[in-house]
Length: 289
Length: 328
Image 1 (cartoon, helix red, strand yellow):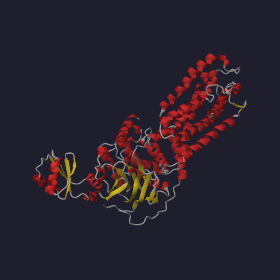
Image 2 (cartoon, rainbow over the protein chains, first blue to last red; image 1 turned 60 degrees about the vertical axis):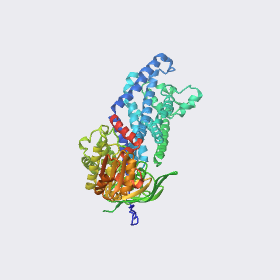
Image 3 (cartoon, each protein chain N blue to C red; image 1 turned 180 degrees about the horizontal axis):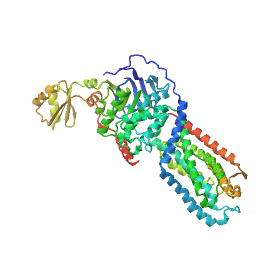
Image 4 (cartoon, helix red, strand yellow; image 1 turned 90 degrees about the vertical axis):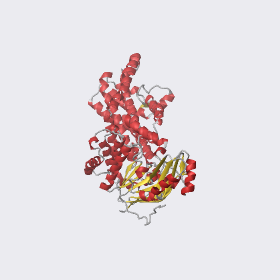
């Protein structure tokens, strides 16, 4: 046996300081950039992700619109398809934000996450980079649907679009952070189905994307107000419809105790939700082993 | 030999009652290729993970590139390159994009990025495929790209965990050519684990690890010298009879594996004619060879380590990664 033992004492070498802060900021950028690159490269996904909103609008929307007729708008002159259209933009943002974040679980499964996690960077960079990547993708997925406005009888102008960009960004950020927090807790792709069925779909149905959140049964009123997506979709709807000559949309919108919430407050609720969930994600990522 | 690249003293990792690594001492010199050899479950991956700061040791100390792994993991990670056992590339991205990603998170200075990426692609012979998506790469190409990536931030030590697992023999050989080139051109210290005995021969020094402990450490020749002289194997229809005859007449105790008898003798060339002359039991074949690391392992642990022994999980994983590689 020739087991070698170190003969000389172990000497400590002072380590040159590693600047992890600026490395982490660079990491946020490159993690975000990778998401955008993959999104752009996967153009079929872009096209395919338009199919679902189109189906909702054309089939579900047109169908309900004609069977409800003028009974829907309670005298506001808003047709069902016009009401639903901003909701579908919200749906698109909701789904893409959560799917986007789920790429973390995918990366974990196929090993790439390891490459990121062993790098000499702080773990918060991973959570923030992924949340921003998801936000950007979801925002684009939602705003792309604005090209359909003329087909559903909604008029847009430059001002509307400029108001919609930050609102879409806020909704996307809140939901992408939510997705990253979920993904940081999930160790395998199996949990994904659970998230989809028990979180994403209820969030969508309760968000007011498909029906007005007024005059609902008590328990449902409560649930819809607890759904963060409600606070992101309502302002989008108000901006889209109010600026296209349908000003009475407030009577179909989100109220708390009969009070219409101002748009900045709704956006602040959404941002706060996103910030808290992003904090959860950062804590989850910083756990070692 | 240059300064010490890695040193570990009394390194232990326990998971509850399970002892994965039971106290390892080792010293790896700067610029050498150091092989960590042992069967699956011997504690190789656990040890390499502790040295790379991916796992916190239960006890003991380890210094990598002069830095305590417990004290400053980020500084250690900046100075080491890692090639994991399982693939860790983004196969939607191109080879160059994978390298750019790495250069960013490892703070490679902007003016050096392009040059270093070009140089590593060249060394790993991937230049002409730099702009192809990684999903179109073969297993060997992916491995080479991972090695290129691990070297991008100019680490002092490159750690590779089973770098050739699941690759065909030709590809394995080419990976070795590249690793040797890296060592001679870049002066990087290479620390690798493997359970392929033939590969361990390429290493400057080897530690044989079994059940969480180092059973032997030395150059391949030193280790082989631990086996007495030559290895003679015979096959026979009547191995029982042959074995007892060998023991009585030649004074050697062979070990038996079905119809094969294996013995270690000081001078094989002189032994074989005597063996053939003296035995009355029928002998089908006789082989005489220099001892291999397989023989060393067998002598040290009483068990054989063979490629077939690769666990079912590893085989599945290798197969799955090949299959996924084609599919994705």
